[in-house]
Length: 426
Image (cartoon, rainbow, N blue to C red; front, side):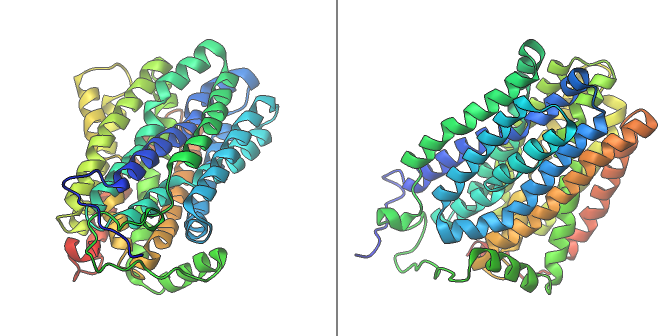
């Protein structure tokens, strides 16, 4: 029997239910990844480990998170979203729970770096992209913006609570909270997340009556991911996207996401206060990324990226001089402005990924582009710690990151024109 079209004006389309479950899952799992940020100082105090040792574990986590993504996208296409996400949540729970028994830095690198990194990377933004591509024809940009915001916002809004746990009950309480949270998400996925619109006998949101689903790819998942990389590597625009997202990771999760709290602590700010400021960045990120998705549905994604990277670069140049001593009006201005731009780059980047090898492989291409984001993040997570150990503060790391953002604002305009926002949505 052919799929039915749900009247979008008179009935809630099940696509929005899928978005709601995905949003909640991404917020929760992103919160799991934020834990090492609040554990840097407690682990220094508990074990005497150096900041660069702890940051190396965070760097491994960021790398695994990124390089798992393109394979996770292929596995979702081959084995289903639910199966991959359930396995990922279980992996996160086991890895986080295992850290309560660690006694050496390599234990942290193995469990939080490798195991939790692979688990969270198996969901990450490819989960959001897969849901958006499967369930939506119209409003895909704003959905991607909403789900992208869930990933970044969740990573930040849990920080005050996790920080209070670490301060009041010790670092092990954070690990146990993350493990329990991951296991609690599994039944929600099992019972409430549907695989695709055809499983309910309906069309995606906004699909015309003659819409046909893309033919399933029969190439093995791992081979599909590698083949997509080989084909994309021949396209110049792919490398522009890779380079720009490398800088995106360098300037957000790797630098500010990992070292904001320790940097603020170095300047006398209480950990919980610094975590609250970073959480506020996450709140404004939700607004900024959803707005970016709305804009991506209407305007040239290349011009949006230019604006985002330029404004971020300027913000990072101002950060060391205005932020860390006390919380004052200029601090809050920075938090709001930087928060609005935190991951606003994702919707236009993902939309441009559809032009590299076509929409059929856009999620996998985005997985590889996202891997470059995490390489940048890993370099910043470890490199900023080295800068701090060598020079006594983080200022040089912020200035270098800001310079890269400003340079990137020029190069994203070199991505080939000839496609409009409407063309890219198809």
